[in-house]
Length: 309
Image 1 (tube, one colour):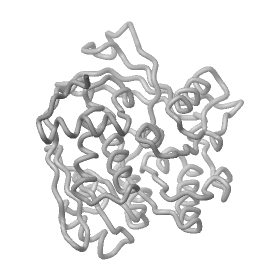
Image 2: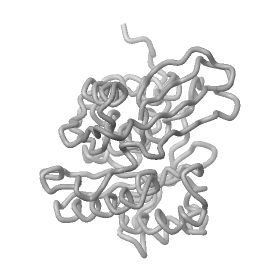
Image 3: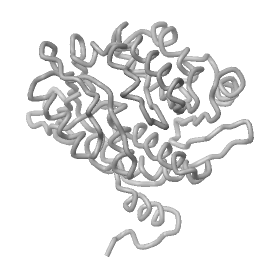
Image 4: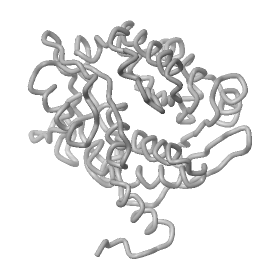
């Protein structure tokens, strides 16, 4: 979607100046992985309009492959308006109904789009957009299986998209289809009716998951596998804009796992990337390069000089 971010500190209804950016859970993760040095492809739809051109241009600038993205000549690009307050609730307004993204269909999920892919990441937002988008999500997961790719899933519950029952019915089953799960403790409670420990254990024993990362309300994170559990506390940083932290965490964690790093290091890198993102406005402005991540993590963990001289 095109993101219009209100000037910092003002409530949305009072804002007169907006900064244009790009938002979207899966595209945020793709941009994060690309900046960290991975090849990443985004499969999605935008309108054949100035907003759609801006979205694709921004993704290309981050190094994301958009060769499988479609531009719809009849439906508009989705729009998101929001304000930004580090210490109070943020007002987010979605304009998705009838958007190009909501018309994503299984026909767009081709074997060519998944050729050579090691990891497929999807969130619960996409299947909640429409019935066609839900079918496309299932087609994507099936295509990933056929391509031999690992499936990563983040519920990313957005309650404005549907009722609790709809989230449970449409998104809950996807938790059991993923090889890697990143979920908030409140999301596991909603979708599984279980606490973080019980929910993680259920997915490890009854689903396909090999790793379940639970993000807690105190911003700590715990990785669960059948071999054990690892915990990571958040890094203490000043928060400018908390939106986008979850996608940044996912990008940091997936990058580490793709590079074969252990669970504790993966959690530390994920927390580091999230800590950098919340210090900048917008969903993606603070996403670091690999070198930037490593410098920041060194400063966070060892107290080295944070100034890169």
